[in-house]
Length: 364
Picture 1 (cartoon, rainbow, N blue to C red):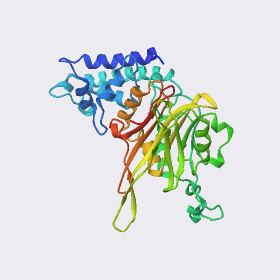
Picture 2 (picture 1 turned 60 degrees about the horizontal axis):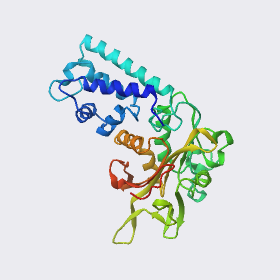
Picture 3 (picture 1 turned 180 degrees about the horizontal axis):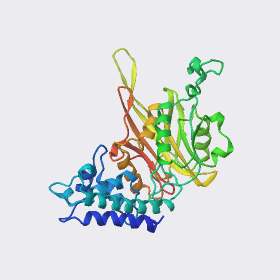
Picture 4 (picture 1 turned 180 degrees about the vertical axis):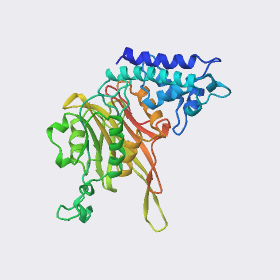
C-alpha cells in the first residue's frame, strides 16, 4: 500500500526540520532531545521521517518538535528542550506557528486514514478515523462471581461480571482519549448484537470465557494461530501456530512457572496474542485481538500499545514489519510480583511468532 501524499509531506517536513540544524542533527540526537517522561526510540524517529512508509506521530509529539525547533537555544551544547515558560515572545510566536503548521499537516493525513490503521493511512493502531468501536470482553464464570454480580443484590455492580477487567480499564480509557469523536462501548459476549459486529471490534480474552473470540478465531481461518485446552494447563488455553512453509507441524506456546519448595507454582511468564485484521463482516472496519493464556497475557497484549514506556517503539516496529497493517504476533509477557510487564517488541526474544497475510512466517 503506497503512502499517501499527505503522509509523505509531513514526513519530509519533519526530516527537513532535523536537517536544518547545523552541524547535522542525527536521528539519535533528536530522539534523546525529544525524550522526556516517555522515551523516543531512534526507530520511531526513522518511521516518522520515512518517505515510503511514514508513521504518524502523536499530536503531543509534534508540539514537542515545535518546542525544540522554535529556538536556536535548543542546540546550544547537547540538543535539549527549552521549557515553554522560558521562551522569549519571538520564540513563543514561532512555537505557536510551528505547532499549528505541523498539526495541520497531521490533520490532513488523518483525513486520508486507512481502516487498518496502517502507516500509509497515518494512524496508530488504536486511532480510528470513523465508525463504532466495540470492546467485547469475557464474562467471568458463575462460580467465580461475587454476590455483588447478582442482579438480586441491592448493591448489584455490573462490572463484577467482567473478566480481564484490568485490560478493559486500560484499553477503554485509551480508546476514548484517542478517538474523542467516536462511540466507544464495551459488551459482554451475551450482549453483542449484529450492529456491534459491523464496526471496529476489539476482542479481549481467550476462547474459554469469550465465545465471540472463539467464533471469530474460527472465522479468521487464514491466521495460522489457534488456542486449545491442554491437559497440563488447567488455568487457561495454550496457543498453537503452524510451522513455517505451510507444513503440517505446529508449535505450542505455553506459560512459564516458578515452583517453590512447597510445590506451589507462580506464573512468571505468560504468552499474549496481538492481532489486527480486516473485519470479515465489514472490510472497512477492523478486528483487533488482545488475547492471552491467562489474564496477564491479555493485559500485556493491551499494554504493548498503550503503555507510554514502550508504545512508540512498538508502533514503529509494527509499522516497519507489517506495512499493510494486518498482522498476528505471539509474544512473551513477563510477570513480576504478580504484575504483567509491558512487552517491548524491539527485544527479539519477546517476539515468539509473527505472521502477516500472504506470508509464510513462523517462530522467531
